[in-house]
Length: 203
Image 1 (cartoon, one colour):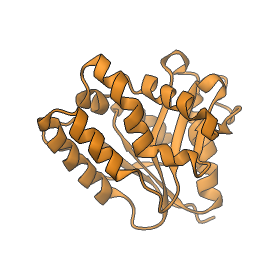
Image 2 (cartoon, helix red, strand yellow):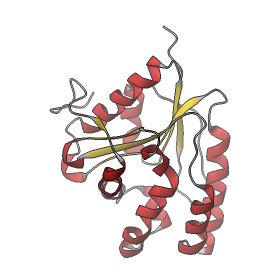
Image 3 (cartoon, helix red, strand yellow):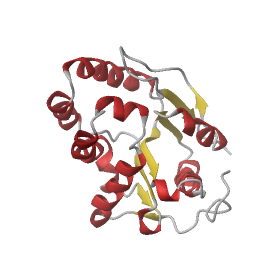
Image 4 (spheres, rainbow, N blue to C red):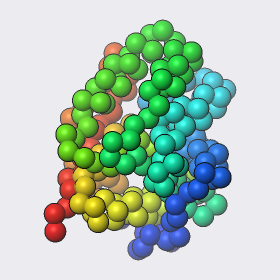
């Protein structure tokens, strides 16, 4: 696990409230500023800053409704999980894709969404659409603390967990927490995405 002040425990991870929504999403936007997939969507910095917050809300804003959004002090990091059976706002996502992406990227992005849907486990599972640490706090164990905190809930409920890694740099973190690669997702000109599954713990 990463070295840092939160690496030996969960630190002060807490459930984010509805009033924390904007600050937590801002952290995700900062954390994903160099992410290969989202910057393929919006290579222009101004467009990225304008559209990524709304995309994040549409994709995983339901986490704030279901008490499954987690954050660190001063919003150093945030993780937005969706419980079994809960999905992103497909209508809002479609509108953002159609309105903000180039026609070429739109087509490939729709292909990515279709593949992502097919890779979800068949059994009930927790889904992690987005986890991010603000650049100033990276390398301090914040991501590991956020992950461990949420996975304790998965284990209590004996449920699987699923995510897609859009950045190769993060795969080792996920593997340390029990996720295994479950294929490859790629559409047209898109960067590759690695779906990863952590099977339910039965003991």
